[in-house]
Length: 360
Image (cartoon, rainbow, N blue to C red; front, side):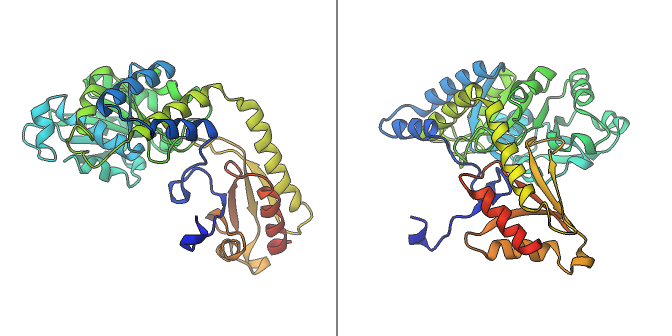
């Protein structure tokens, strides 16, 4: 099918990223979607029942499936700004009578602010606790926390939640890529965040176009009318019956899978790539686990660009130009970051061999 479109499948050394299609769905997920495709059901009813089942599985007060994690930001924001008022929801992105300000740490800005702004939100940026406290007023509708930026901001997650609770402001945590280990799926709701977001198509390996919004019952109930098929600001954010069935199957599978065995396999892939570069002069290949989000074994490859006369960008371009093309991250000068998470079969061997040819 890809060949007929003039497309060539690639080796994914980046990880569960949208630009490469997220993840590979396991057979259980594909089967659930195929079965769901054979029948008609009332989508609003299915959305509520799937949400209730996911909430039960993830120890959350309530849950709903969204059209990706970015969609969850939008509909969750709409719920917070309108305070569950149906009339106010219909006026968004208008600001009359709306608590339209969203407070966010400067270090947590990421480009996802647009998902809040399309609801009419005004982003108020702060850096310190004192600035956060001073920024809260009668126009404040929500406080937004980007989980992967936890270590970059002065206000940590627990303190952020505590301030929100004390001042009566809902807190949202975007933890889209932070479902490893599996306990993270209920850690943040139990911490006290009013709304928590996960991607359905990353670690969970569900459909790429799904996300999960977990949290307070009243806010989830207020988020549902903001999304298709109910209408509202998120009318274009459609989740089909196939995706609803698929992401539920993905959650059920993720909670039962042998993560220890998966980890062992990832370590073997890392060792294989490092071994291919073991005798490469001036090359360091190390095992690396990110501090937050996608906390799984990776490989870092480093060298002195001046001494080698070879830039990381050149190596990345040569990897892309090969057959099959290999996508990796280039986090800095003379450095590559390689995720083995989504590799399959002999792909780690191919990556190791190509790196040895280019750097050895």
